Length: 180
Image 1 (cartoon, rainbow, N blue to C red):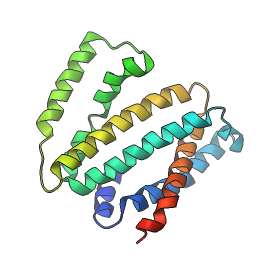
Image 2 (tube, one colour; image 1 turned 90 degrees about the horizontal axis):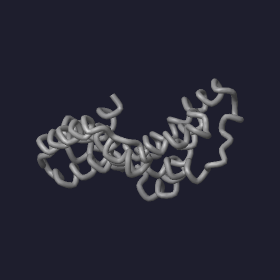
Image 3 (cartoon, rainbow, N blue to C red; image 1 turned 120 degrees about the vertical axis):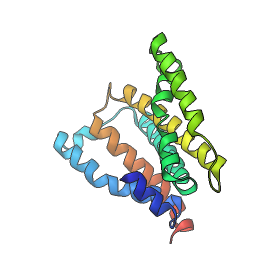
Image 4 (cartoon, helix red, strand yellow; image 1 turned 45 degrees about the horizontal axis):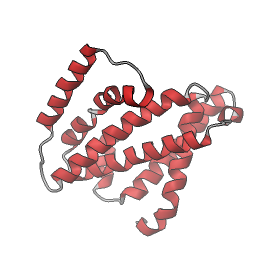
C-alpha cells in the first residue's frame, strides 16, 4: 500500500516533501512505540552518530524509492527493490563479517540473475529509475545491517524513532525550496 501511495504522490509532489511528511507522520506511531516500551528513557543512546548514520542510509532509501516509483511502472520498481535481501546477503560478510554459506551464495547469484531479467528500461527515465530502485535496495540492505549493530546497545523503538526524527530534520531545510 505504501508503495502504491508513494507512486501516486510522486507523480504530483516533490520528493523532498514526500520524504519529510513520511518521516514526520512516522513520528506519531514511533513515539507510541517508545511510550509502550517504557517511556522517553528508551530514547537514551550513546551512539547518536550511528543513529544518524542509519537515518541517512534510510533517508537515501526513501529518496531513491520515491524516484523509482516516479520514473518506473510500480511493478518494475517494486521488483527491483526486492533485490534488497540479495544485497543484504552479499554485503553481510564485508560489512559485519557474517559468514555466508555456499548454498546462499548460489541462491544470491540466481537471484541477481533474476534481477537482470527484470531490469529492463521501460518508459521514460528507465535507466535512471532502475538505478534509483537498485540504490533503494542497496540502502535498504545496508540500513538493515546497521540495525543489527544498533540493537546490541539501543532499544528497537529508539532506533525507529531516531530515524524518523533525523530524516524529518534533514528534509526540513530543503522543504521551502520544494513546497507545493
